[in-house]
Length: 351
Image (tube, rainbow, N blue to C red; front, side, top):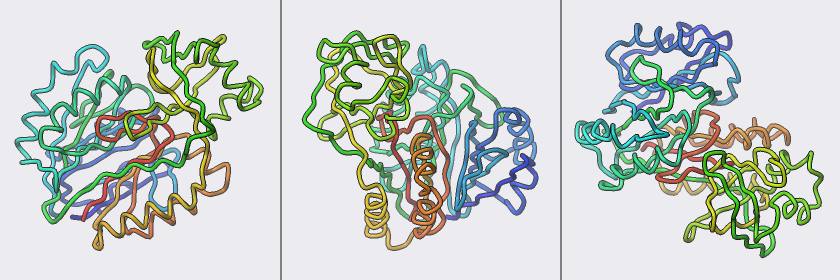
């Protein structure tokens, strides 16, 4: 299979798709002002091609912050795209669409990946999607777009998750998740006073969450939002840790980018040697895949900001680019199988 990446800094979709012939799947990454126009134009240009899209930045060897980016798979790919609606209420109502698509592409663990773009309510959307995918052990990689909108096959949806099933007819696929954080100290917290609808965290071990965070890290209130780049929370999930970013201070509590529930066990995390971790990820992928057709990744906005602040973003893209054809987009939350995580990178590698 082959992977296409085209861009236009000015948002000219015709320029972005120049040279794209006979795609089997298209993914659109647009800006908020032109998203609807781009969705309509893309559908006219490629009326019979499955497509998904969202508002967000894209990248290959550089980041396209505005304008438009188009990622496409072609040459030996079987794909289907669709949408689950009402993700905040009852996405399972539309689950038959996914079940039919899984059957239509004859999806299997070895050669099929599900890529999704979500408008929000990620945890509910992922639980629903993965209830189908896990029957065949199919992995999922995706993320949250901006503006509360996604597109699928030429239509725009709110409160929805757009997905694409991609089967590699010429080899394997495998999903990866990269965590550049490790545990800080031996702190373990029991969350309480949470609000699921607002993603707020009221207390940690019975004390105001803001106070606990400030006292441990000795950080003033006005710096908490940026301190999360280096010290997010982590939710213990078996042998794995899901990263939870702090969005803002809310009274004596904290609002997060991911839902925290009462009685969740949380730990505090610390930024590790991210350059070394990235090199290890690249090395692991090379060991798993001597021959690589394409790599599609989702990087968290906070990782992008952290890497940019430390003048590492370009080096990071160059490092990932050594794998071959590497492209992706910057999300507001990352998806890995049934997990909704923050400040992470998820990717899929095609043999």
